[in-house]
Length: 92
Image (cartoon, rainbow, N blue to C red):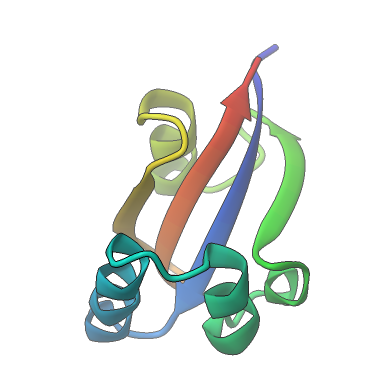
């Protein structure tokens, strides 16, 4: 069974996600931005979702985590919850 660990920031609009992604590309701290902006309870932990199995998250989120590059900010990814910026730390 595939497992992964990821950080994410969840916001309501693509525009907000795009602005945060630009800040991240300029070197902003992912954890700090997650604490300030993320609507997910994981924001309090810097966006850390901990380890989870393939299939535990919604498909669009899962696809990025299990198929995208490691340690790069991916997104915005739209789900029914809003727009995510996702940073996959590892997969096993």
